[in-house]
Image 1 (cartoon, rainbow, N blue to C red):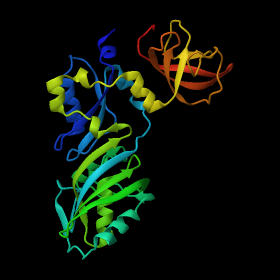
Image 2 (image 1 turned 60 degrees about the vertical axis):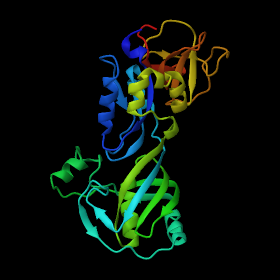
Image 3 (image 1 turned 135 degrees about the horizontal axis):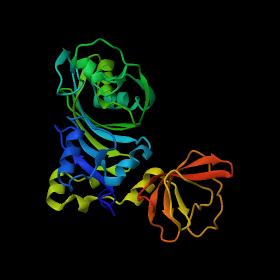
Image 4 (image 1 turned 135 degrees about the vertical axis):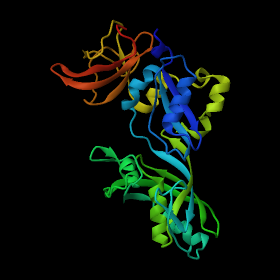
Length: 312
């Protein structure tokens, strides 16, 4: 087994504030044998901390198969001050008195924001504008507008409120949601402005904060101790598993005979085209790779798109 296959798996890392997602990738790569690939399953702002899932070795090839994941955050918001980046690292652009608010009134106002809505991303964000990142254009002083995108807040809960304008909120939201933009919109709704003073990501899909490892933990106990198994993690992400009868397999090849559960007769099962599947050997149940169902002259076939080992 080559190095990429030996280290294939996933890490649930607790990113510290002040370190970029790419910095976390570099720190983990430094703890691995030379040449092992590392990639993240979606970035987290440098000032934020919390859950940052990583893929290692061969698992980096499976990143496109992960569906966009729901997120959960704990956010600290400071009312009365808005910054150009909408977080604590930016320059202050406006100040205003915080209006007198009752906690119950504020709690109800925040809860009314639950549900689907349109959100304009921050100017300092990774959104593409004519092929360039918005944060590059913003730092150059370019003038541009970002279109609103549809997001959804599944739950918004006020945890703590201080009369000075500092509040703590838990947010459960769709992928692509900017908590900084939510803080901006709340502040403008109250007429005093606001910025995100602290952000902790609690969940990214099925990766949870309680299972996350700090970089210090990884340095002390070793990356292998924290490595999440390839097959089981992909099963949670993809949700579908197919079995192929024992033979030698090739990437890019279509298979009409496969099963969707162990012990079934070998036949072309009733499945839809265009679905992604975790593919395993029928006899041993060992992980082979990832595939997608496609239309073929003989019916719906399983195409192996990511094969763990060549000539498996």
